[in-house]
Length: 326
Image (tube, rainbow, N blue to C red; front, side, top):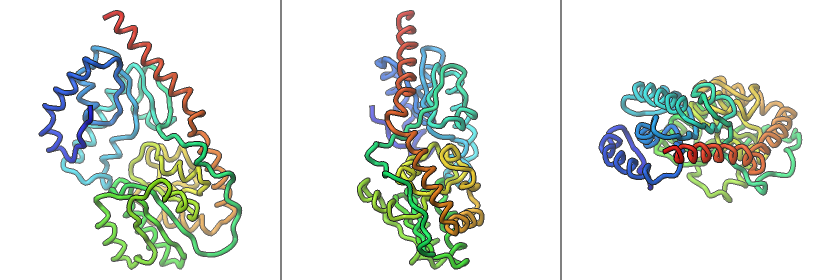
C-alpha cells in the first residue's frame, strides 16, 4: 500500500483516520511486520500490533535531533521532538527484533532488549569503487569542495556557506559544489549572494548517478556538516571514490570517519578551521583518502548480507512460531 508524504502536523491529522483504517486492514493480510522508524505510519501500525503479535523494527535515524532547533522549521517542534523520540524508544524496547543502520549510536539511544543487529541500509556496488586512494598532491593552493544532499535545514548548508565565507576571508582559494534539491534553495542562494560568494558556490540542482560520479572524482573534499543524520549514503559513496571527508558528530557519521575530521553541528567557525587545517596538509588528505576507501568496503553486498539475512530469518521464525500458537 503506497503511503502519502506528510507535509505537516495538520496534514497528518487530516488523513489520520483514513490511514489508520487502511493500516488495520493490511495488518490482517501481513505474514510478518517490519516497521521502518521513525515514521508516523509506523507509529500507527505499532499501536495496532503492540502486545498482539511479534514485529521487527528497522531504525534509520534519531528523531530527537531531526526535530532539534535549527534542523526542522515546523509547528510544535519541541512537542514533536519529545513525542517522536519517546514513541520510537517504546517501539524499539518492545520489538522482537531490531535492525539498526548504525553499529552503536542508535542502539545506545533506542535499545531493543531482544534480538538486534547493526546493518547499514547503504549498499555500494563493487563497480562503484575506485581502484586506489588518491596520491599526495603538492600541486596548488586551489581546492574544490563538494556535498551531495537535500537542501533542508537539518543538513546545515547554511553553516557550510558561512564556513566558506570565513575561509575565503582567510585567503583560501576554495570552490563549493552543492548537488541536490529542496525547498530551501532560494534561502540558501540569498545567503550566498549576501556573502558575495556567487563565484565560489554553485548549486547544480539534482543530478543523476552518472552525472554525480565525475564531480566526485574532480573534487578534493566531501563535506556533510548535518544537524541530524542516520548513516549517510552520500558520504559512503564519496568514501568509495576515495574522497577525504569532513562531517559533524550527528548520527552515524562518527562511525564512518575519524574524530579528527569531525566538528560539532552548527559551528561555522570550527568547520572553517577544519577545512583550512585539512587543505593545508596534503599528506593528511592522502591518508584520509586511503582510510575512507578501506572503510567504504564495509558497505558492499557481500559484507552486509549475512547479518541482514540473519535478521530477516529471525523475524520470520518468531512470526511462524506465533502464527502456529495462534
